[in-house]
Length: 212
Image 1 (cartoon, rainbow, N blue to C red):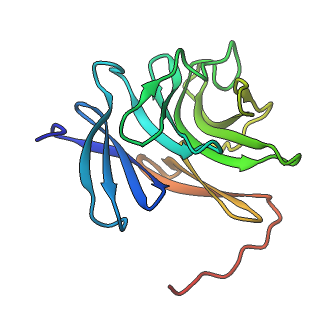
Image 2 (spheres, rainbow, N blue to C red; image 1 turned 120 degrees about the vertical axis):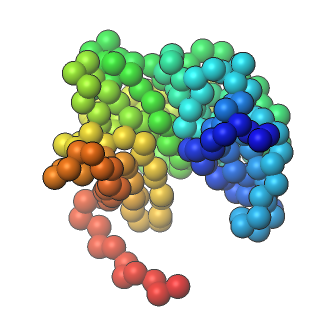
Image 3 (cartoon, one colour; image 1 turned 180 degrees about the vertical axis):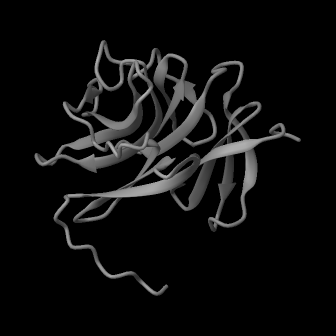
């Protein structure tokens, strides 16, 4: 097969009138394009395996400039690539986020989930939620953020510590609240993964489910 024998870690993003779907395959991070979000056509390899042998868990956002930014994990930490069309990508020098000297991410950072939002002062800000792993193997969810032209700064505290090894975060922002999804171990049977969800702010009143 064109992408090898396995596809995983899908990461969709709406770009203009199309939906771009990024995924990890045996040949690197691939990209497929759709006009309706249902039928996709492969459009090549965004990040070839030979350029980033350990690339995993891509997350793609549209920056305020209109450029696309892809964040992905590898053996060095979390790295970034940029693109103007979503098909051809240029890797940025060095990782943008690495393991800490100590603390909850001293043994590694991975699984980025990027969002672009606006700070309380009205400035655009890019946030990365990520899996943090300490030297004893415990996993939690951390957060780092940056303003345009500045490096990422890690938040002083953890975003989510479910106590059951949360990992691989995914974030959905609404006008008044944010939902954080993460895989974690099933408390009564660690052979299984479950999906946990957290909400911020903690005192928000969620709207009723939609029947649609």
